[in-house]
Image (cartoon, rainbow, N blue to C red; front, top):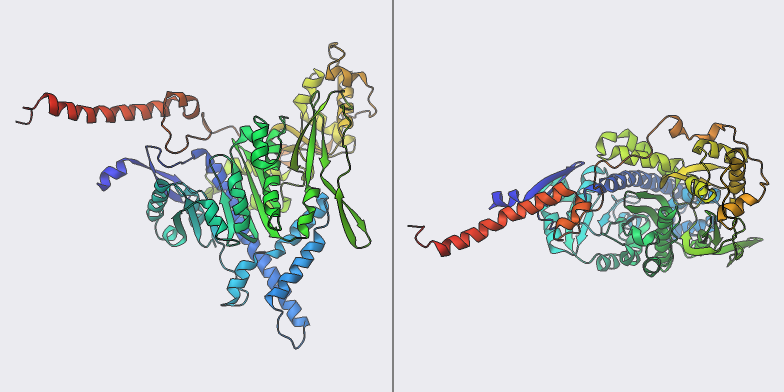
Length: 583
């Protein structure tokens, strides 16, 4: 029987974990998510080491304060918590990028109080190994890789509400030996109920659903300890990128726009939604890394509790006005602050950010959002993660892809939401396109910053206002004339105005990033055809899935089914038609 069972399974090895996969697609396994799993392991490794550093810093601070209090015992944990909370509250009154960076360095000091409390019962100041929850585990491959590959990891809890998945996960835990058996446990449970009944228990919660994570967010933000990490994937990109704006609003509370930057907007909508759920419980998030890759978006955020720091949320959110005629977009912050003496007042944002008609081309605006308009990465973390990945490249099956993505992210402007497309600008004006280096040089020579974006190889992030961008393009068109167009077209209206700024197209030193100058690969092609999400578990494979799985995979499956079916039918008909055959 065991031999028959093994014939129905394929052994899949990824990293240091192996799983048994049923050929009948009973449990969902996605080969393309190797990038996602590798990146998560890289972030988790950095989180474990940073968590340890933050804990040691906190202990040394506690020791110093104990030394100062001469003749007295060390302060109680409750007092320490209170002082940390007030320090955090004072340091969170800002919006700008520089101050945001400063916060992200200070905030981690509010490292998980839960392990601290539980640890102090045994050995004062002991830090327990981080506890991980994978809310939707399927085959359990991700949980097994966390347990086997991340040093210092504690317990990994793998959940699924599908009985076949839990059975497969338990089988895979045993298949991977003693380390997996000692660290990973699998449960049949509804992830939402489990997370709600285990508040502030997990140092890291991983949400990677097939589709939208929206129904899991409310319980997920409650189950993470203070200073813990929430990793969240959304694969419903058609919804997040504006294909069904009303559906996106119902799921995420934000209206998407179909600009070239739609994939970055998807990231920012997801972050705004997580922040909204966290705020209901006096919590807020600090994004560490936000990635758009392949067919999904993935965000890594830390969750903190502070009623006063939570008041800064409106400063981090904005509405987006996108001109329907040209590539111009503008942000409208939801809130603002006014400081008087030592007090800070929170007020509604000034508006409107734009007139009724676009000042560049005269067309109307579409309005989308709200989106997260604060930084979506912590550059210090990105540098640490990239350094860690490069130091152990042999341990990442998708090293090339994740190192390329992290390299590009490390060069992004952190404080510039969304981006422009050079090709879109030229399409509006119907002109030939300058090279990216020439355009970047013109922006730099005008006194502004510019960078690429990991979301789009042709995207450009810049803090230059739209009138400066259009002036540069007007100067370009003067040197590279275009054919006469109808006067009411957006491009004609833009070109009819004389440029205020005289663009300088001389090659600027910073026009190429360090990675570009060293010719480091930053955007890699897919490793094979039909690279994307496979069928949901249990779906019947038919010929209509050729575009998704490829003709070979579909034909192989159909042939396998056809070869099994006649045997069963033949054995029945043989018994009926030829009763003498057994003699």
